[in-house]
Image (tube, protein in one colour):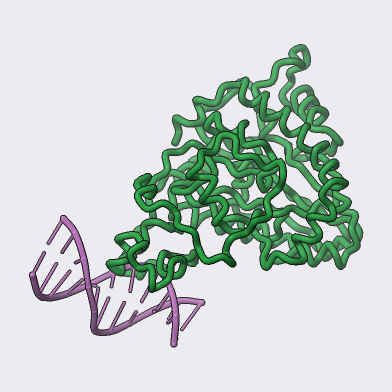
Amino acid sequence: MVVVQEELSSSEWTVELQVQEQKSSEELDMDKVTAAMVLTSLSTSPLVRSPPVRPNESLNGSWKEGGFVPSSTSSSGYWSWNAPSDQSNPSTPSPPLSADSFKPFRLPFQTDDGIDEAESSSLLFDEPIPRKRKNSMKVMFKCLWKNCGKVLGTAVGIQKHIRTIHLGRVGESDYSDGEEDFYYTEIRLNTDSVADGLSSLSPVSPSLASPPSFPTQDASKSELSCAKMDTKGMTPLSRSAPTNLYLVHTDHAYQATPPVNIPGSTKFTPNGNSFSISWQSPPVTFTGVPVSPTHARPTASGEQKQQIQTILSSPPRASVGLRKPRGEGKKCRKVYGMENRDMWCTACRWKKACQRFID
DNA sequence: CTTGCCGGGGA
DNA sequence: TCCCCGGCAAG
């Protein structure tokens, strides 16, 4: 796991940055082109939620932004953790499920490049494609640097800001090692009506991209749930901001993790119409290897880093003596039905913990 | 009630 | 080891 990030070259980060810019404009186009489609699908699709990211049928690693980012950028192995579970799954290719579970609607540009046939087919049988509310969304970029909070309109702007102001890289404006990328977050200013906005803040809002599951299944499950709760905590907060609905979105899954187990890191001030999200450790790096040790930075304390790293690398908590909480995902039995028992994974057939649909 | 799966047992 | 299933807990 640690190795993965060290493989990220700076060029990849650059690509990432470009994609972000492209994304924002692309989204605006999306509004025009597919507004009707989105509305229709929203009104008809039974449930709009974040997709379950299952390691054994993963979308080639990175699920971002509900798939709006061309997956080709992620084929460089952003989240190419080795999937912990069996790759032996293909032995039973995903059989066609019942017709009603097939969701024919797909975004026209959501191509499968970088995703092979097997994976794409499993895509089809997955939950509805997560849609993002993008009505009247204005994308801003907020500096996460402590006591800064500067908001700029473009990713480039905020990167330049961070680079020059916080990282002190005045003379090397071209140079980007992607480090700035950690230090800002994308903010969507929803100018929709409040009621509309509130309805979009269902417990797990589609706009709040849930962080991809980390392969350390249980670790992510148990610990990242904290992050989820923090995210949910924004709901009442947003209610207190009647006009501007801030949907904080983080571009990197690990960027979304700072609230994890950092008590008080996410602060809401319900009084008035303002709030501040000020976790103290924007620059959490996975490697734990300081990128530029010379600069004083608003980094997580070593303790926090240690903590986070421990979370990410710790083995599944053994919950000794306690029964493992049942997975909430659909398992073979539910998916295939009793009549297709031979299609179940062996574990399910033996009434053991399902190996195909791991939560 | 259904579902997931642990623990145990038979071949 | 493979396979099955009673029974429990959760929903």
